[in-house]
Figure 1 (tube, rainbow, N blue to C red):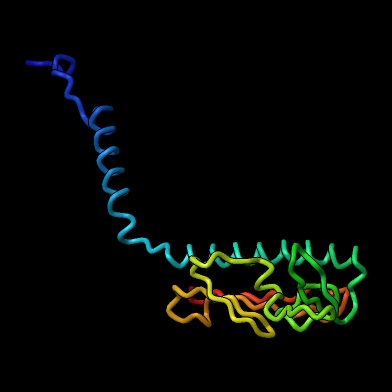
Figure 2 (tube, rainbow, N blue to C red):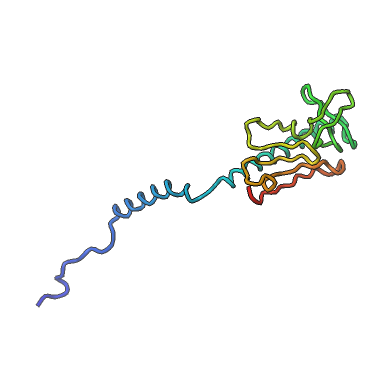
Length: 167
């Protein structure tokens, strides 16, 4: 009679090479199939709008610093940057420009011109009060936008409102 000790040892499970091959195949499938199932366009639009917001915040800070240096922190004012005048409200860039005191037309030379978006961008700008920045790729541009409202006083920064519900 055979004893249990003499039975041949049977291998069970997968070898390391087989597991690596399966993982590589699954990785290749995931890389090719995932983009078809994951829609990242909404995240991309939100990122674009966050970039615009960052540009606005930087422009506001720099223009306000220039306004402080030029003592232009009253209810209305203007600063000269390069060859262009920019309208100010309470020492911060205006949402929409106005006629400058020096006779230079600064109409449109508010925050929208100050950040100077590339003409090839998907962001459309409405020069008004408040100024609107909308992503043209969204199904409803009113739900993928940010607005820039004038500063209420010299101690309060302009209000930037964001609506990213359905970018």
